[in-house]
Image (cartoon, rainbow, N blue to C red; front, side):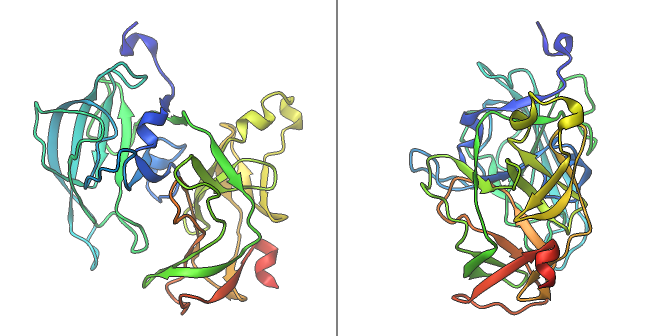
Length: 309
């Protein structure tokens, strides 16, 4: 059956794609392409065989086109970005789909064959990025008969890997800082490199997204926990350490945030950046451009009513 005949409504991201990267997020972005988890941001790290590349290709295939596009003007970023269209080879659940890849200055051209893990070029820090966002590849998938250049329209994505939820009580020691963020040592990955982890929610599943500085986020792994329950018994509310964060939509994974304050030592911050990671540097990332936090400082993060203490 061809791609056009199958009328796919979702695309599964297999382990061989995701395990090339140190971390990923389907929802930690303000852009419509991530609504409903229809795009994934992939953050490169060291590959399984020890190689590193500037921008490892998520898939094998043939480059159809590269083009330069305009990006919003930002003082810390360039005002242009690049789009790479790549037809995926098999055998793979992605075979025949078109991968749309952004945030890479291409070293490839139309007609080039690439293998999964080959470098597509150099990562670009474009004006689409918030100042606290690390360099990454933005990837979505479409069928060949879809519009390939429009920003929205990519297929919903599902994970072909499990993500282990980690308990986190909101405390941690600062291990890294930038002008707009601080990273804590907790929750820590219990076995770096062996699988993906994320911050666990009270009712199960892993949170993904910018809370609350982006309009919404998502949860991974929750669907399996409620699949056998009658619809009327499924709790749409999600919480962290007893505090309500938002409501899960009808798709079972997209969260609309409540009006949730996030604080450090009672002082309001922009928010909490959440994602899934397999590297040993995993820890809560605080978005706090207006708060001075130093490496080595132990802090308590409040979310919801906890933030009012």
